[in-house]
Image (cartoon, rainbow, N blue to C red):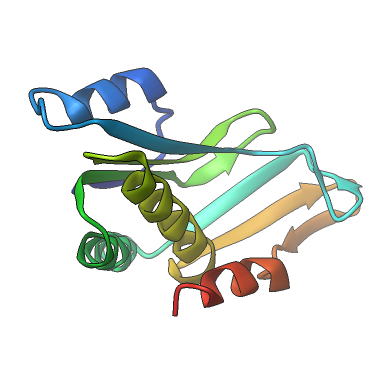
Length: 149
């Protein structure tokens, strides 16, 4: 269950291929790629800076992946989350889950994203024409995560 917090971009197809490599039992792969938008709350966004606490963030995300493994019959999961300053169109997060059947992969992938949005210790600051502003948690993200409790 690889978890990587990094500044570098990632190659989605290479990461998926690496995760399912050598496991003929894999019958399903579900993935999600998050991308930096150029608009948030009606304002244009020039860049997004993500901060984290090294070590603590990885441990937190590993815990979320372990919880997904307990809930669903999955073979493996990958979470890559970028930090640093990113621009619109940049990839920000990749979640990949492998399993025997699609249902398990879909549910685990959605669970991981919902919990990454609400429980993972990342702090986001947008640069807008009016200056920098911290991004607050969204009620819709909290509601999405609540369905898993």
